[in-house]
Every structure is written in C-alpha cells, then in structure tokens.
Image 1 (cartoon, helix red, strand yellow):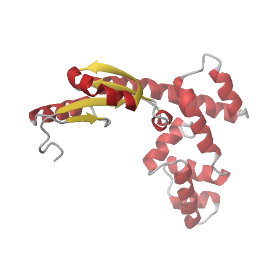
Image 2: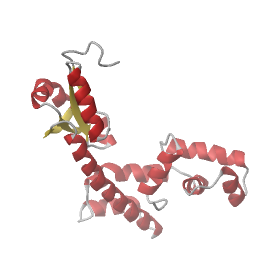
Image 3: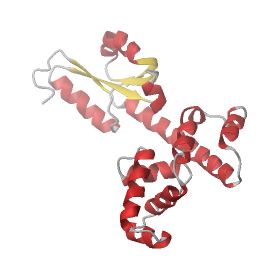
Image 4: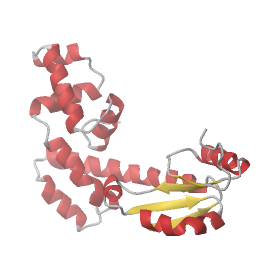
Length: 212
C-alpha cells in the first residue's frame, strides 16, 4: 500500500473526501510513522488551470510549516484551518454557499435568455451590480459558451436526456431514428464536457436548462 515503508514521509492529500475519511487517513499515516496533510481546494476549474488555487489545510501545523514553501507554489492563497478533518468541513460549507450562488446565477441567465436578452450584456450588468459574485466571474462564461455551442436539435436531445427520456422516446418525439439520437447524444456529451449522464444532469441544473 501507499503507507508501506512510509516512515518519515509527508503526504499532501488534495482529494475531496469526508472529514471522517480525512481523519482516518491522518491516523493511518501517523500509525505508519508518516504525516498526512489535508489540502482542500476551494477554487474553480479556471483557477486550477491558471495555478491560482485557494487551499484550506488541516492536520499537524508543524507539518504544514515544513512543506509550506511547496504549498505556496501550488496556490496563491491558503489558510491553515486546524486539526484533521477541519479543512474538509470548511470546504463543505464553501461548496454549499457556492452551489446556492451557482443555482441563482443559472436561474438568472436562463430567464434572461427566455426574455431574449443578450447573455454577454446580462453578465456585464450583473458584474456591475448587486448580482455580482465569484461564481459569475468564474463560471458564467463557461456556462454560456457550452450551451451556446449546442445546435437546436442537440439542445432538444439534451433536454430529453436530462429529464429521463430514453433514446427511443426522444426519437419518436422529434421523428428521427434512435441511431440519430445516439449521434446527437455523443455530440452533447462532448460539448458539455460530461463523461456520464449524471454529470450532464448536474450541468443542466446549474445552467438552468432543467429544474432540480
């Protein structure tokens, strides 16, 4: 296992896990004579791509100080939270608030589109008013771009997929063959960057295409 001959080693654990699991990993590392430092990421995909992560760290503070130079290279901002599991608890809180903000943004963009407004203009107005949020800065352009890349038929197929319709049912509704639905389905999954139907449904909810 990873902890075989691990005495004296330091593991930086960036996995998204429950606080309880982080505490189990910390205890297992300690038993093996190693150290596990929790490093929860609370940034967007764009921040990760740009190397601008915000890290929340937990575990043994002396261990954190020991690897701090490397941690600083991984992130632009960071905060040591406390003992094992504590960073995961705070990350859960961050995700809760972020998801609420994302749902609100998706509803606003969806309604704006239904009213015929230009979404780039709406995003600019939002950014200059009380509707501004970190989610608007990091996710709105991606939401708009992915949905805008779909053809009308692809949007129709996506709507059917995320509402639980089978390929045959979608084919009957739009008078096309099931094989054609499969082609559109593959296009939708690629353009939405979804590896499975669950990811597609989550994105559709965030983008306001379908209600939760």
